[in-house]
Length: 492
Ligand code: F6P
Image (tube, rainbow, N blue to C red; front, side, top):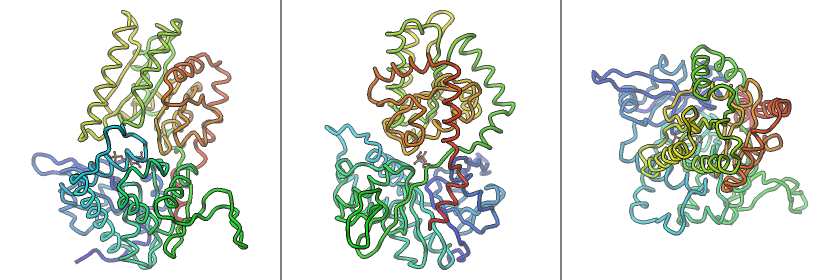
């Protein structure tokens, strides 16, 4: 017995808008998630009949999913949103999520491999890939069950790359879009993947009517991979009826008799929410303690990240160390406030990276710290209110990812900043496309140049900082989550 077909709009993502803790007595505690998708979906209202399909991630989620069966979760837990949580077998989920999504596809799109020794695609990989197919099929089955005729389905991210094609097979009547929140790898790097897998991922996304990205650059890379791996035809802006080839941006991919349109929607910051939330009492409290930690008269360089290999926290710390070494005038006069929140701690490489971040911060503090001054204030416990407090007081924000789909911190800081904040920004972040003009732009691998950019950012006059921040905030809020979500729906 499946769920009735009731949904005119469906969203599918690995991580859903709610997660559950499981008490020893078997009780479930729901915790609602934030993020662009949650606030985007709220634009259509909870009475729209939209359904969100997601995976159970931990034991609490699994228990909640089992109790709901093929029904939706208790709407009291989800703010009224209809959510179907899939109870996928733990070993299949782990192989698909940790093995393929986070250890292979994430690494490919963020260019994270140390290629002399990795990746190695062996028998274990083949098993994980089979699990990834099973996990994607579970989503396709649930979506096919829930969708009314001709419903619109928005499939999110690299976890679910195979879903569009699988769903089209099951339900050719649906309008299907895929959205990539990550960068997309250039063809030479993408082709590290085994040939069949490289082709299957592209075919999976091309099963949809539309494939959308956060920036033009990632959309172009996707089109380039389709051409290089599948021999697909790329339609470009300016392609004429007379058969002449356009030279503009890629607008669609033609493959095996179908056309998948390409789209770009640069998710922006939610100004209303951020400004209101960042003025609440818990943020004020944290502001006071952060100010005390930094010390009177000192400047702050703030970074807020998940401890994610692509965020480049280690080189950020090395650049700060270099700043203290080469510009002794900043010693005792600046504090690097670094929030490195836990992420994907099931993976050893993430745990090792977190350790390395800690070690380098300690080394800097041991090398340069004095009785009244701790050069790096590292916080590793996730605290949204404290992040907002840091946004408010930051003189400089350091956002230096190796590669990032967008990077919302770069967009949130200028919105929340009280007195203006200079932004040191990697040219490899998606946000660079919109914020590059008013940021101090760095090559994320270049520690010397990053140290120099930090120096310039610290020296920037109050007036210039405030002016740049105003312009950054305007660019950062051009497409807030609700408009971002509606634009995707409309385009389908
Ligand atoms: O930030 C990019 C992103 O792909 C988001 O779209 C997605 O929510 C997240 O990464 C996945 O992270 P996690 O493994 O913690 O769910």
